[in-house]
Image: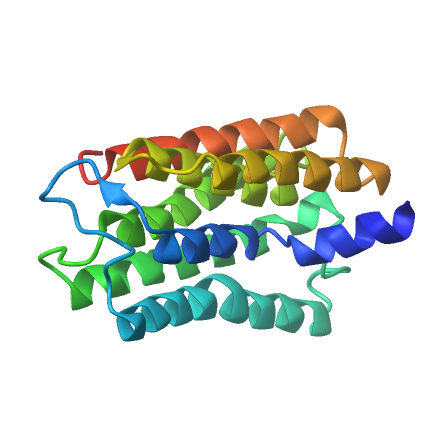
Length: 216
């Protein structure tokens, strides 16, 4: 049980889980509700690879290198950020990279010719990280639950903005959320309150930003 929980925790690291959602929506053949909306699915294969590559660099690769640097300099005692007092700096790093990602897309595409989800998902990462910095002062909120919540909120918002979207991705993401949160509980990394708080906060923020952007 412990080994399975550890494998799940590494497969669904907080910064990887939202990338799975982006990958799904780039290749899911669905139709937008309005003619004016830009479709993720109809983007050229080259643009899809570029978008995912940029997200991977700023959401996964760069933060991982930064966290490892903090660990090597002994500014954090564990890559898994087990200590609540050590989480603010990594959260600020995640916030900074998400802001840079959002700014990069805004600068390169000022007229928003790309689908809105490219911007809103980057913005979601920034807002969730910023909120979690504040909540972390009170309790060691679960970052794994946050990643799962972002995934679910994003996919629900995406489904709500499309015609006849398969329910499979949303249902699977909810199931995965339960598995991820259970693994963290089994490993005794978080309490049920910390897990549920992390999931509901991030899922709510993710749905709101991805559904209403650019109106927010």
